[in-house]
Length: 357
Image (cartoon, rainbow, N blue to C red):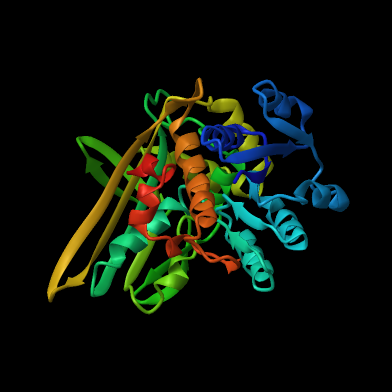
C-alpha cells in the first residue's frame, strides 16, 4: 500500500530522498519548504509541493495530517519544532541531525509518543553507528571502537584541500562543538580539532581529528562495554591546521556567521566527491585479541536522470533505508529508536542500504 510521506526541506538532500523514494512506486512524497524557488525544482518533475512556514503551528499540523511519517531534511535548529509537530500529529518522525542537543529534545518527545522517533538517520551519525555496532556484536569484549568518516572532494585544488559538499552550518557545528567519546571506560567530552592522526588507505594519505556529533547514541549503547570509543572526521593532510588558524588564531569561533560567510565565499560546492567510511573494532574474541574493520568508498550516481553526489547518495540512502525498514516492521513502532538498533546485515540488504554494501 502506498505510504504518504511529508518531506521537509527542498535542498540537495531533499531532492535525493525524493528521487530514491519515488522510483520504488511505494511512497507518495509531498515536499514542503518556505522557499517557493526551491520547491520549483520538485514541481517541475511532478512532485507534490507545499509552501510552508514550519513555525506556523496550525499549518504544520495540517501538512502532517494523513501522513505515515515526516522526514526532516531542514537545518538542525528546526528539530524541536518538527519533532513536537510529529508528536501532536501522531505520525512517525525521521531526521538527519548530527546535533547532540537537538537529539536530546527528540528523545524527550519520543518518551511520551505513540509513534516512532528515529533521529540521526544519515551518514555519521547514521550508517557508521549501525556499522560499528554490527562489528562490535561479533566480539566477546571490546577494547577500541574507532569511527573515521569523510566527505571529500575527489579533485582538491585549494589550500584547505576541501570543497563544500553539504550543510555549512552542520560543518561548523562539527568543528566547534564538544565531541562525545569514551576513554578508559568513562564517557567524556573532547575538544574539537584535536587528537590529529594520519593514516593511509589504498595509497592515499589522510588526516583525521575530533569532530562533534558523529557518534550519535553509541556512547550510551556501548556504555560499560567499550574501553575507548572515538569519532573523527577525515580530511586530506593540512586541512585541520588551517581550520584551527581560522577558528582559534583569528577567533572566528566567536563569529559563526562570519565563519560561514568566509567558507561559502571561498570554497566552491562540488558534485565530484567521495564519501570515505573507515570503522575499526578491536577486542577479545575466542580468547584472542582481534581487530576487524569496515571500509567503504561511496561515489555519486544517476537516479531518475539526475546525478546525485556521494554525500547526497549516502545521506539520503540512510534515511530512506530506515524509513523502509520501519515500514516493513523491523524497527519499534513507537518511542525513541537508535540507529544501532538496526542489524547491519539487514540494513545492507535493504534496497536503499545497499548503497553501503
